[in-house]
Image 1 (cartoon, rainbow, N blue to C red):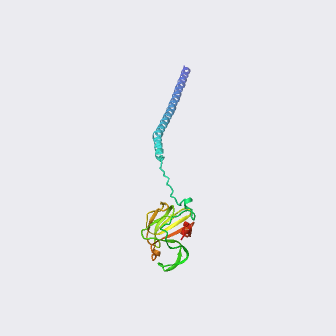
Image 2 (cartoon, helix red, strand yellow):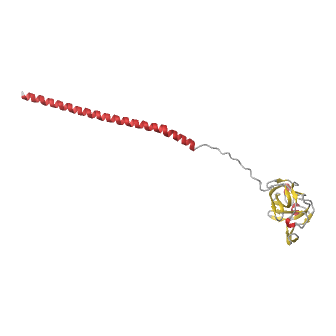
Image 3 (cartoon, rainbow, N blue to C red):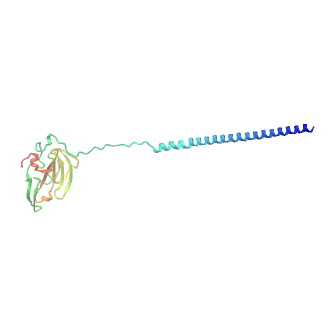
Length: 231
């Protein structure tokens, strides 16, 4: 009888032990799945939050900065027309061959001379690389041919001076003007008035006249020769 009781006790202990083991396993499974589910949920929440922040914050900033940083602007450009620097040469303004007008009558006071001549005003001898045309103060001085005004200035020795490019590398200096009615860059036509006669400070002892110089290709030449005139 005691043997039978002992066997029943052993069965009960084994059954209890089995139940305890099953409980422990069940608890472990519950903890395991609960933990994994929480981690996945947390990860999903974090991922969603990151995507939301990236989409809502970064994208607008990127679009705004790109638009602001790279504006499209167009600047109006204008082409400035270049000023002419020389007078064109044609059949009517070829030195020594074409027709040239006297700048102030035909009466010559002093001719062209590369040799030294006495200057009463300065009291010395010097070359006279010009032709002095007689006139009266206020007389009209005209262009010997079509030309381009290179300069207009006042000189202590030669008074007011107008420099004109007459084409064919011929440049004329009209010296001793009282006034000039042309300016640098102006176009002048043959016979057109460029000013009125005044005085020549370095030749003030002589009667009123126009001190007229001509330079051909950088070299001073006799104005009457280059214009085809006789003295």
